[in-house]
Image (cartoon, rainbow, N blue to C red; front, side, top):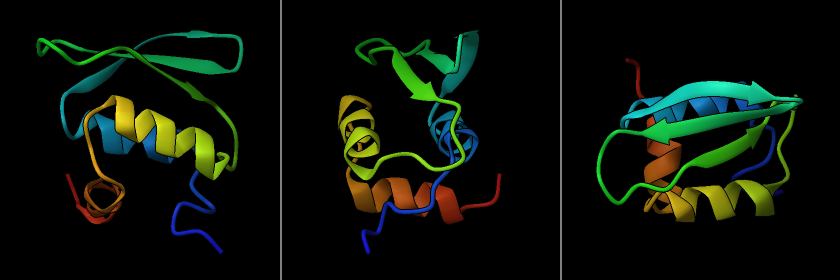
Length: 78
């Protein structure tokens, strides 16, 4: 089982919020996140109970994080 298994879209949004991303709007089942910091691209996260590990890995990479950094954000309390 992948380290990125069993992570919901809402959990991912909360983790990305810890580095400055904010939920701008939702289009269908996709939550669109923007970051006010320069150089951070927008992210599109599906609002699913479980995200596909490859899709999540791609969004983590777009945000400039490593998988280990993202997993630490998930564990971190705000």
